[in-house]
Image (cartoon, rainbow, N blue to C red; front, top):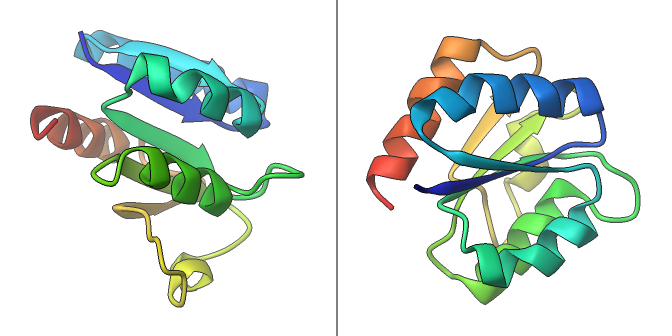
Length: 119
């Protein structure tokens, strides 16, 4: 069963993501703190990391960079309602996909399903 990390400081969005991704046969692990997600990352070896951009001390881009440092092939999705895809245009490490909030649930499910199948 593939593990999917969902990292967002909005608990309601974590619950939504868990509800829509669990039926895919995923072990969905949710985190409000990106630093805690990073601490659990090596042992869990998630197939996909979905992360919000703005979360306080550590941004979603910081989390993606650190996950890729630990696993250069890590599949990642950056989700945000405050910035657009330009936020990472000059970044040395980029997410596999950017999704704007509010997102289409069916589209997100299909993207995650596709990433899991490549894991």
